[in-house]
Each structure stands twice: as C-alpha cells, then as structure tokens.
Length: 251
Image 1 (tube, one colour):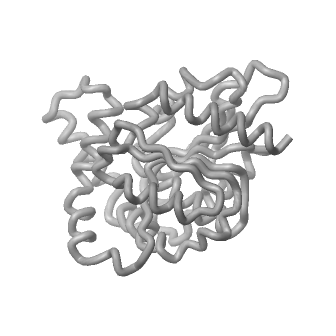
Image 2: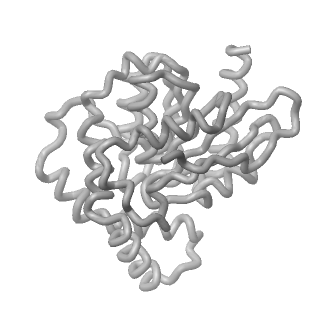
Image 3: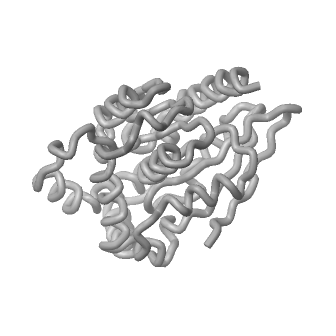
C-alpha cells in the first residue's frame, strides 16, 4: 500500500527545496504545524499520511517491515531534496538510507545505541512501562498545555491502546536494530536534532548517531521530544540553514 502524499505548502521561489515531512509513532500532520508556519519561502513542504498515526487502526504493525512505507513516501513525493523525520520515522528513514541511499535528511529525536550491549532488561522495562508517560508528555506539548492532566492521561491511555503491543514492538525493534545499522553507508548530508530534556530519545542518542554518520552535524535544543514545537523558531532556522547549504552544494 502506498501512503498518501500531498503538497502541504508550495514555495514562492523559482527553484524551491522540496521537503518531505515524516511524523513519528502516534503522531500526525499537526506535528509539523508550527514548522509549516515558520519555514522559509524557499521550502516546498510535502507530507505523507503514514500508517502509524494516532488515528490509524494498527494494521501496519502486523507487518515486520516498516521501511517500505517510508521508501514509498519518498518515491511518491517525487524529486525530494530533503526528508525531515521525527522519532520512530527517523529510525525507519535511517534504515532506508543505509540500504538504498536517498536525499539529505534531518533526523529529529532519533533513537540510537552504538552497541547491543547497551540494551539490558532495565532498558526494556523502562520503555515498556514508560510508554504511557511518553505519549502523555507528547500530548502536553502538542496541546500547548490546553489539556487538563486527567484528560491528557486518559487520552494517552487510549492512544497506547490504539497503537497496541505490536506498534510498541515495531518501535522498540527498530531501536534494538540501531547498533547494527550500517552508518557508514548513510553518505548523504544529515542534520541530527535532539532535545536536551527528551524523556524518550535522550540527547546522547542523537550525539552518538551524528558521530557515527559520515556527513552529519548535531544540534541540541532546550526542548523535550518535540523540538519542532517547543523550539519552533530555532528549529525552522536550523532546517532553513541546512536546506540552503545542501541545495547550493547539489545545484
């Protein structure tokens, strides 16, 4: 099945940078609302309707391979210059880039460990039992504090049930595979952005990943797991700077 891809906002220049935006597990197009408002006029913004959105049925998670969705989204969007991927989608994108190559990438709040030995039972327990808290914090940030704590708690529980055990397993399996990722094969320019206070993907993950990639730059912002919302202006500036540099080098 091919994900629906649409142009969210055209550019206003003659030679735009085509940007494809991919949201993370339990996210949706609203993830990019603030970025879309602040992005420079040279960026042509495209978004994909990925199956792991908050409103999906969860059927996608019964399939072992998630890379086909991201590969299909890139192909469907056409001549993509830059992919901006958040969280789980950043990990899936990395696997696509290592295997097939592709456009330049901005990896936002990625999950990465350099060695399998860094995963132990305590890590698994932490992410399993803390999944609801991660979702709750995401709702707090995305709602900009408008949801009462009790309402947010119940919404996070419903979202966890909707994503289900298979959805969680797809996420954590991608995390577990990250030490085996052939980072040397990811030869495209990459910008890795992490939040200093991220409760899900700690900034050390982003820094370690950037150090492992051949052509990567690391930026840390005073934010949690959603720096595109919490630090929207600086986030948009970083994407604009990175896109302009890459576009000039490739033309």
